[in-house]
Length: 116
Length: 111
Image 1 (cartoon, rainbow over the protein chains, first blue to last red):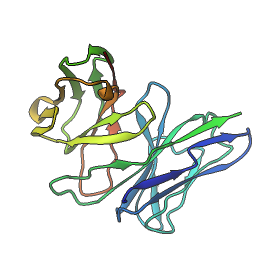
Image 2 (image 1 turned 135 degrees about the horizontal axis):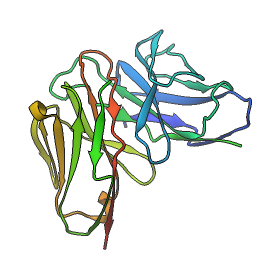
Image 3 (image 1 turned 135 degrees about the vertical axis):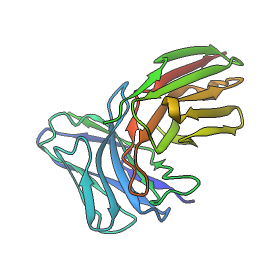
Image 4 (image 1 turned 30 degrees about the vertical axis):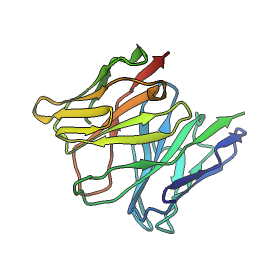
């Protein structure tokens, strides 16, 4: 089945540690995204990538890093510099270029990160 | 940036009732999407609808781009419709989507 796979589903981090969230897609989408969702809130964009080996900061990039070495993969590292990392993290992907369905965005199932 | 407001913030319905969710946005957009987030966090795309009207089963959506709002209609609601409904918009297309999300409408459908 085509889709977006995120892992792990649940992750606990000690203060001062870096952690990496995995995101893989087999939809052959060009662009990939990472969003953060806090309780009762909408989604905020952390980073996005339109092409391999290139990525751009979103609205809340501080304390996060990403890489895009393969079209299918877009891992997110939550660094120790992120002061309040406890949140729900969602990976997404889209085609680029519009068309009848536009840039319809598809999401993974998300990863819950808790700082202990 | 574009501001997105959704109303109502919370809605409780009895099964079988109809409802209308509203999304207002502050600037012209080329990309507007509606999503349903289930209680387990999964976000499902419902509609890509920058203008006009679309229907999918018991759901339909209308966007009046000139007046900067979109409506999501849910008819004959079921308990499985419970969750949070998000509207997201973007001014540009043709590149990677930088969607701006509203804070959502939390819907609870009871028996």
